[in-house]
Amino acid sequence: MDASFRSDGCAPIAALLYDAAPLPSLKDILSEAERSATFAVSHQPSEADGWVEILRDGLTFDLHGLTGGPAQPLPQHRATVGLDPSSGAAAGVLTLAPGPHLAGAQRLLPVIRVAADLLTDLARIGPATAILWLPAKLKVRADLFEKAVRPWLQGGPFPAPAFVALHADATGGLHSEGLNFLIEQEFSLSPVSSDGVMALSRVAIRLIDWLVAHGPISSSTEAVLAGTGAVFLEVQESRRILARCK
Image (cartoon, rainbow, N blue to C red; front, side, top):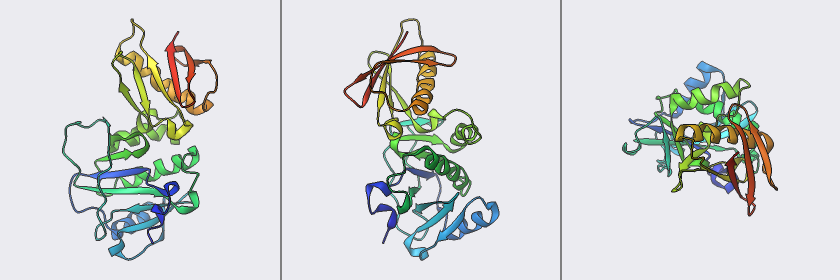
């Protein structure tokens, strides 16, 4: 049975997109595992099944869509980083899902951290053109994804541009997509007349880092953000935060 899709808790969290066929094969994954020694293949069904179980730092993930097995559909995306938004569909897709033992834990930062590290290794096979973080419907050019997550993996700030999409609204503000996967809340950030889009984006990225560190909020509070000042936060219902620069 296809273990990763037995429940929502084991659904894919990311996809690797390729511009050219053929996609990586089971042999390619085995070769990279031997070469890099950063992950291991812990279970390999037949090549016709098109998937493999990968072990990284004690956690298992299932990679689907390998050459020889069933093709994976292109997941929906609504935002892109470093790529032409109007570019055509990918020639092929691999999806990465937490193993069954991680069901219910896929939102935890230590699991996401291992998944991000694994994705940067897997993206070198082929190589992949982009990494699509599914909770945010966010497609990021593969090298930019690694550039964003590498400092975090080494102890730096949370890499918001790799995991949370920002969308402009009709008022000139921004709202997040994908933050709910991390804290079960999204935010809308109201603009200040003197702020441009870039300035507001910097505030939004700092706010994502603050919220990931502090967790969901249940009452009005002030977030003091490094380099951008204070932001006042109000809770609208339970899953929406209204953010306003002070």
